[in-house]
Length: 65
Image (cartoon, rainbow, N blue to C red):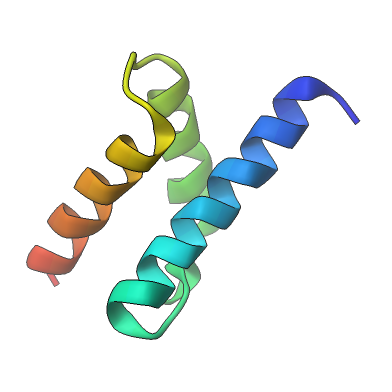
């Protein structure tokens, strides 16, 4: 498995857990897999740590729902 694939899997796991901890449902209850993959691409192009990037996204997503 490539390093990129490992990073993507780890990112998705962190995202899923962030939603699970805040709402009791995983990420895919709120966003599609395509949204997650696009979010991962945005994360890769940012300079933020994954946990900060994910927390900001989760807060904004839940605020708008």
